[in-house]
Amino acid sequence: MSEDQSLYQRDPQYIPRIAAVHDMCGYGKCSLTAAIPILSAAGCDVCPVPTALFSAHTKYKVFTFHDTTPILEGYLDAWRKEDVMLDGVYSGFLGSAEQVAIIKRLYREYPKALRLVDPVMGDGGVMYPTYTEELCRAVGELSDGADVLMPNLTEAGLLTGRPYAGQNLDDAQVESLLNALLELGAKHVVLKGIDRNDGKLRNFVVSRQTGVAAKHELAHDKLPYMIHGTGDAFASALCGALMAGRPLDESAHIAGEFVRHAMESTRNQPRFEERGVSFELNLGELTQLVR
Image 1 (tube, one colour):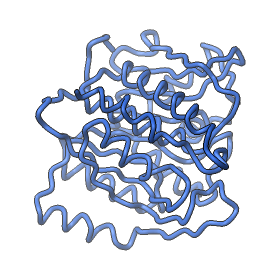
Image 2: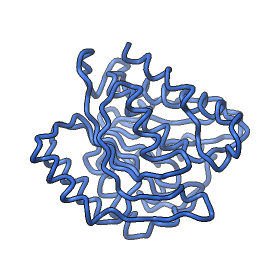
Image 3: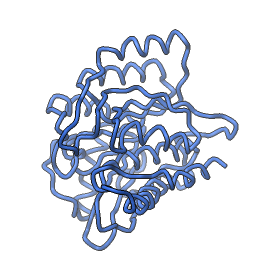
Image 4: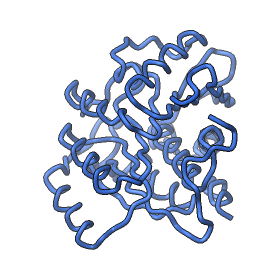
């Protein structure tokens, strides 16, 4: 991927519309409560497609879960009747395997829209509690034809059928995993969360066109604590930077720094470790992309 290649050519007077196919949590910052403000700050019109309703995210011991699959066909039928236009389809957490068909419908009806896939399935080597093997296989279908596929290491393993090997991967392991992900049919891959215990977290960006030999390595300072929801914030910021017309490698760097700064802000909030990443004080970083 060349340094100046952008996946989206932004007209500075135009506000692109993004369908955010994700769940909605009432408490705990993640999913749509991250995607809507983050993409909006980057100058996008966010059109939510809620895949599930949670009282709180799944790191809490008590949460309610409502699968919205039965309402989504009618939801999109109404969009078509009103001739809603989309420039991108950004998918994340799904409530059921059947919802993959909803995303594929969006791909058919909006063939020019960028396909931005965050295959939200798990973290730390463990699937999320509402996910099943069937749902993970269905999510994997979205890899084929994705303009950008953004898995963490757990999700990369689930997509490629490889066992989770932890976060400390050397270059050969990273390249092997990137090749396996590209073989699924994605045009570009952002592999997140490599930790070599040197005070840095690394993400890798690769294009099917240029191959893993031309991969970009992006290193960010590691903070001494973890916070729920950083993956959603990263993916949303990356999508926002892309829709602002920035190249993918630059967008991934912007997203990584945005998340790091937001984590620093989060540290000052009560019960920060379970509540989720608090990015509100850092949204100005993304607003500057379109000013």
